[in-house]
Amino acid sequence: MRMLFRALAVCLSLLAPLAWAGKQTVCTITINSADEQKTFRKYLSPDKYEFVELVERGRKDWLASACQAKVSCDVLVISGHHGEGNVFFSDALDINEHLDIEELERVSCSNSCPKLFANLKEVYLFGCNTLNPQPQLTASEEIQRSLLREGRNQMDAAQLAKRLGLQRGESSRDRMRMVFPQVPVIYGFSSVAPLGPVAAVSLNRYFQQAGPGEVGKGRASASLLRNFAQHSMVSTRGMAESDPLMPLRRDICNLADDGATEAKKVDAIHEMMRRPIAESRLLLDRIERFMATLDTGKRASPAVAQALEGIARDTQVRDRYMAFARDADQLPVRARMIQLAQGFGWLSAEDRRKEIVATLGDMVARKEVGAAEVNLACKLNEQRELDGALQQVAARASRPDAAGPSAVLACLGSTEARNRVLENLVSTSDAEVQVAQAYLRQRPIADAAELRGVTRAITRMSAPEAQVRALDTLGRHYLNDRESVATLKELFARTKSAAVQNAIAGVLIRADRRSVSAADMLPTLREHRLSAARGDSMVDALIARLQQIS
Image 1: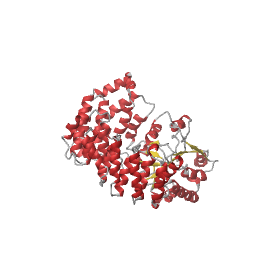
Image 2: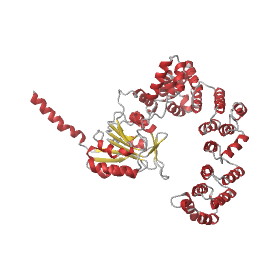
Image 3: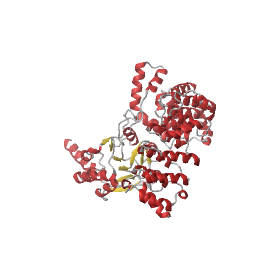
Image 4: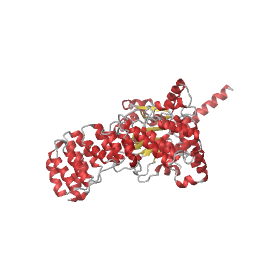
């Protein structure tokens, strides 16, 4: 009998490699640099590895296309810049492709694409902070206060708030582990990742030392991590069923699954809302995105209407939700929750307006009002429906002449406040310039005379760094005024700052071509350009463009 078991063990040991002996599929998602992809191709034999590039240039639904083609990846290599907003993107102006993590969640959660990631053994994420363990969301004091309101004692509320911060904080690492559950090895970077050419050097060194034999085996490579040690490469595993974050994954998948009906997703949101509001607060962005998809037609369908009615009638949840919203530490969060409350049927249009006006009043009453608050105020009054509340909000301003409150009041239609904001654009204070920039992104200058005045004020500034910031804001406007162009031309000729010249060129290259005369502008650019501005700069780009049209 012992001999039989020994023989069986030998057979199994011989058969095990056969499971890996077939060709493995290496899927690549090349958003930015192709250096990493090319290096893998260089060392992985086509006899053992088949490469499939999932990105189809010019096609928006390229990931869905891969699902329809029933591609099944053994190894996945994603290359792209990775930053705020959880998106992989490119810094090349001619590349429009990007990859939202929400799209990866949809594929991971949906039965419509069961094969693409089902057999993954390794994932390589070449992007900054792809496995950063720091939470992107934190359980702020408002969460603990909400738990106290719901009847928990101080100790329980503090402990639960802390646990929610850990379990619902959603670091980049946690999101990747949820997107790729059960995957044995996920490589990424805990902070800044190397650029493509630099990453290729480390990959080359790794393959030369270890060879290609480790790829696709589902085991973390100490050699790979060692070669990328100076670039903060780390590895982790995909989420297991027993993981404490698995309930969060289920919540996310309830909304991301493209096979679930709208009514089922509304019911899932209602179920989330029945728990402590703090939990649904940390899923606010996903709930918002789904609710935004419910147009009038979808809301009118019997199943969706019934599910929404269930939320609208739930006064207990509504009261807890509104109490949390009004107590939110971050006013943008409060405003978003108010918007959502109207979508749930908890607020009429007039009720929503009163809540928003109260929010803006609390905003200007604060000591510090920054660019984020100004951006929010202008967006809330995008349709000018709040202009009538100007006096009511202004009465609560602690410092109505300060940059932040002035910009909020300007968003509500105050001409006097708008004039103060335009003055702040040429301020030497970073904070005041940022507030002015936030306002002008939402309420750009349309009047030619006003634009001339702002341009003249910018040319009179004495601090080059502040001048560059102001010019960058001006560059977002479509300059079509010859007088303003002439003013900038004079500044270009007399400034001693190469950065200012570059910023001027940035404004002019975006301007209406009819307002910039090549014959008039080119001599000034050539004669007065500063040597520090030569090379890869906006000045070069402007000269090249004007030469084409001269």
